[in-house]
Length: 112
Image 1 (tube, rainbow, N blue to C red):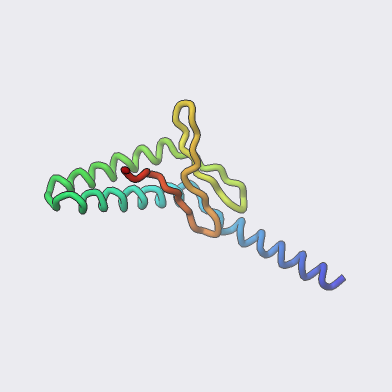
Image 2: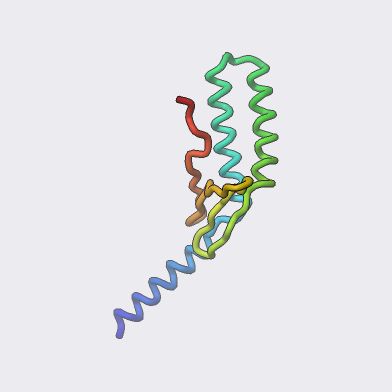
């Protein structure tokens, strides 16, 4: 009886930890904005370092942040959360949140 009780207590503690650390929509938004910012900074550093490249990066980050906030839908499943972009005729999973961390996929494909 004692091993069953300790196993049940361990499972309950693990589920409680997952529920308490499930990321919310703001966490998903921040992670995606950070991903976009990293991409834009990389693009501007690949180009010549001019004031125009920095301006493009700033405008892209600001505009991209607004788009992310308006298009992102986060479904909370209590122990994890999933961020989705919905565009006409397509829904795409862009982030998964677990244990207070948001994992983002390869959002922007590399040019070949």
